[in-house]
Image (cartoon, rainbow, N blue to C red; front, side, top):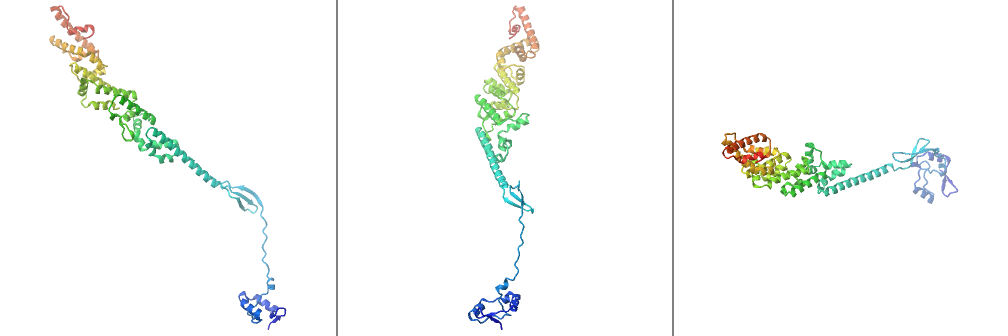
Length: 402
C-alpha cells in the first residue's frame, strides 16, 4: 500500500523507486486520464496503481538535459558589386556566400527600350508609307502603294521600301516601258520623268487633233502608244515629227491620199497613223514614205505616172512634195514633148524620169540633160532650115529649165 501525503488531503505519497519506474514507463501506459484524476481529487478513491499507471512529477521532468543550440559566428561582408547582366546589387561575404541586396532592372529596362524602339521604327515605317502614298496620290497612283502596304511597313529602309514597290505586279504593269527600255539598252527612268513624258506626248497628240485611241488610258492608266514611245526612248521632238508626218497624209488632198493608198495599199489613213507612231518604224523611213506619197500626189495631179519606187527614189534624193509640185507642169510638158521628138528623130525614148532629173537636178541629171540638148538641137536644126526658128519646149533647157 502506498503512503499518503499529509499536506494534500487524500493524496498518496509516492516513494522514489516508484517515481523512477514511472519515468521508465512509456507515456501511453503512464498517462493519467483526466477522468480518473478528477475522481481521485474529488473522492480520494480510484488512484491508479503505481505499476499500471503513474504520474510524472513536474519536479522530475526538470531533470532532463536541455538541447543546446550551437552559436553560429556572424559572417563578415567583404564587398559589393553590380551584376552587369541583371543590374542586381550583390553582397559578398567572407564565407563565400552572396546575397542580393537589391534587384536590378537591366533586363526590364532593355525590354522596355526594345519595345519603345520597335514602336518608334514602326511609326517611322508607317510614316514612310504615308509619304509614299501622298506622293503617288499626286500622280493618281496611290493604288500602287496600297497594294504593297504590308511589305512597305515591314521594310527597314527607304531603299527596301522603294524596291518592294517597284517589284510589285501593279507597278510593273503601270511602268512597264522601263523594263522594255532596259532590254533595248536604255536606262530606266523615275516615275516623275515617265509621267512627264506621257503628258507631253498626250499634249502633242491632242494639239494635232489625233484620235483619242492613241492616248486613251487602259488598266492602271497605261497608255500603250505612249508606253511604246518611252520604251524606244523617243524624245518629244521626234514624237511630234512623227505625228506631223502622219497628219500630212491624213489631211492631204485627194491625189496625195490616193497616191499613199496606191503606194502602200496595206495602210489606210488610220493604219498610216499607227505606222508613224510605231517606234519600230524609223523616222527617216516614215518621212521618205510620206514625201513619196506627196510626190506621187503631185504626179497624179499633173497626169504623170506615179510609182512608189520612183517617188521614194526622188524623196531619198532630197526632193520634197512641194518642190515636185512646183515643177510638175514643166516635167509633164518636157516628158511629153521629149518623147515625141525622140520618136520623130529616131532617138532612144525620152522618159518622164529624164525630165524629172533635169528639172529637179537629181542624180542622173547630167546624162539626161545631154539627151535633152541633143533632141533640142535636132529640133532647132530642123526648124532652123525651114523657118529659121529655134522654138519648141525643149529649147528652154538652154536657160536651165523647162
